[in-house]
Amino acid sequence: MGVGIGCLGMIIFGIILFSVASSGELSAGFVWLCLIGIAGSAFGGLFLDNKRKLGFGGELSKKLKDTVKKIDGFNVTQEFMSPNFESYIAIDEDNKKICIIENEHKNFGEISKTLNRYLYQHNVFSYADIIQSEVIKDGVTINRTSRGSQIGGAIIGGALAGGVGAIIGGLGASSESKSIITSLELQIVVNNSKKSNYKVVFKSPNDLGAFTTGNEINDINHWHNLLSHIINRTDNNSSISSNKPLLTISDELKKLAELKDSGILTEKEFNTQKQKLLSQ
Image 1: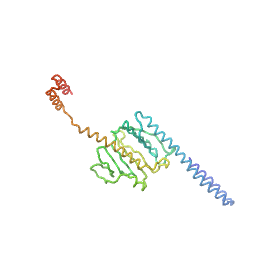
Image 2: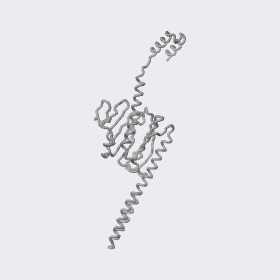
Image 3: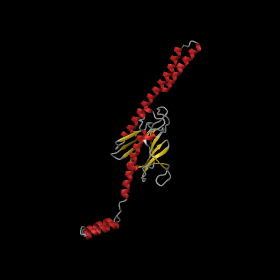
Image 4: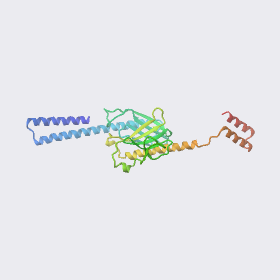
């Protein structure tokens, strides 16, 4: 609406200027007045439009936070909200859960109350459900950590351990800040048969400056490192569990026999425990 008002003002001043010029009574002062009016209309329209977007952005921010607050058993300890309000991620470090919110509608361009649609869907996952975290810069994968892969470095390409791919450096704030980055996304793969792939947008070409922090590189690195730690820790716990020796019934019977022979178990206790094992 602000742009429309600005355009209307520019048209009106333009018509006035053209009408007076046609009558031959045009003065330099009047020309300057009309030019200032046209410029003022343009800047005024942009100001009103920006103010409207800021207000709508505040509404979307509140909507996202209210969505998380309504989730039972989830307490936000860290969170990130996309500058374009298309996605959101939060972590509950006490209950070891991750919440991801996405807009069900695919919007293009800047935030708009009239042109875009916003319907948020939230999903909560346990730490064990996080399978992969991947940093994507301008459509190219530059860093990835996956379950079962102890590769902490950055890779390009689709394959992980043992596959084809060029090893490159990670996303460094000092080097990347010198180049222009148009998009930064964190792609998260989870253990969910209905929807296994989620994207959290940290930077997009149409972000409104008022909603950006200038720390997008540090932010995405932080969240990728956080998820990588969760993935690796879950991996390590699984490895420890899988490495525990599994005792067969035969092994258990031998142990019971040794306990009986050493006098720790009586004949009756031995037979009772033996029957329990054989009935399993």
